[in-house]
Length: 487
Image (cartoon, rainbow, N blue to C red; front, side, top):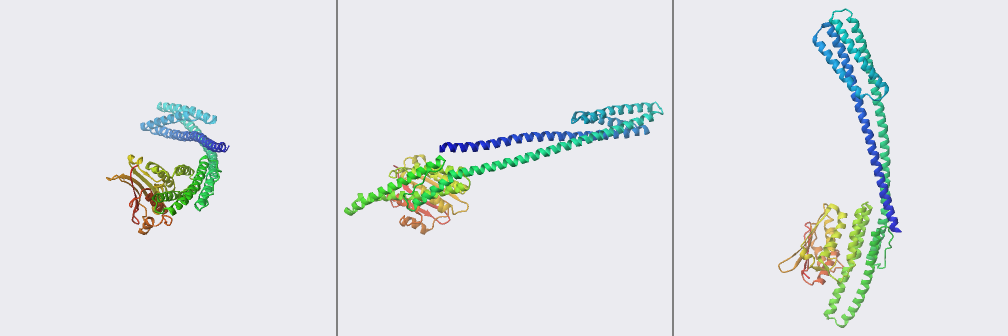
């Protein structure tokens, strides 16, 4: 039932966002089409205005050159007259294609065309009488001038109608734009509301259970080994993490009970035979398991707090990736601690941890792994050897630098068949006293518990004076070297 509810909520959110996006896209397309039509109409009206003005100027020019020729008989004036008539014909022909916004405008244009024909005919008749030397040409000239006056009035009326149509078009465009703007605001509001709903859903289903899980991990780290988390999320991954966490806690309790029994038995054997080497080996093995178990609650608490902070910042996808990584780490942790890990397993689980830290540090953290394939499946070491050292490099080395840094993991075989495994960072480095504390003091007393714990486990796993060394200078980073052998 819970899974069906979760899917329904996700589907509803997806459908709502898709519907809003499609609706907004369709409205935008229709609005743009409407605005394009309006833009085309405005261009057409502008071109109409320009042609009407051209026609009006042509009539005025023809009138002036017409009168000048009759007064001076200058051939240049006659040529200018014919050019003005040609300009008028072109302008009125274009207007015939542009005018299309009302019967009144069409009627005015039709009247203007007929009057223009009459005007040209009257001018020709005046020229003919003038050429014959007849005195009555003057009356015909006055008729032509009267028709020119009508043409000017028609032009003014057509200009007025065009301007009026353009104003109506602009008003309609402004109304459409106002509606479009209002709907835009509504859609943006709906988007914002949907995002708030999504954040609330994710907070209820992920952050709250993770916060409870972190509190439970903190209680276990403080010594309350009976503390358990209750699966309460609708998210399957979060519930799986909670169940895996509880399984880990049960295994820790079981392991500690077994260790207690073993330690009690070993104490009895030690009292009977203090110099027995077998008893000493068993004690070393119990200590090894105790060291390996001791890191789990501390690591879980820090990682879950990191995921919680990521969710608070609204980075839900990053949090989901971190949940996947920590689930992988926990499954690896639940495997048999008595069995050493192959180097490839350690590298893969360390990559998962680095993926979690990359979400936290972003571009401030980078890493490089340089290990040949021939070593990955032939070199063995205790489980969770690399992760605590990488964590120490990030938390105590790189986190203290404003511009971050790089962690490099490298392994190579020397001429003596020894595998040299190094974990190096370019962080703030360690002081000599810190190195001495990590190398010489008991791992329980050291502040660098990750380094001390791993060093102690390596010394039990592969007894040697130089199995684990630290080289560091304050300000120049730290390099930890582990010496291993194949098989």
